[in-house]
Length: 82
Image (cartoon, rainbow, N blue to C red):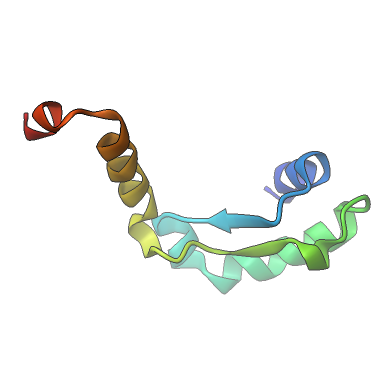
């Protein structure tokens, strides 16, 4: 995972990388600490101190919240009512 995230950081230079979902929240620091250690070794072109790497603020249901928000933006009230 560190290789993929490192490549994305190098190419896109994002302000933040946010992990969500039940796996990320179940692992928490067990995921983020080793990931940061690997990113420090791999990412050279983008200063990592400028990239926030954290868990989503909406918890394990962040994907559900995103899907609901997308549906609310793209569907008409009649379509939402079913």
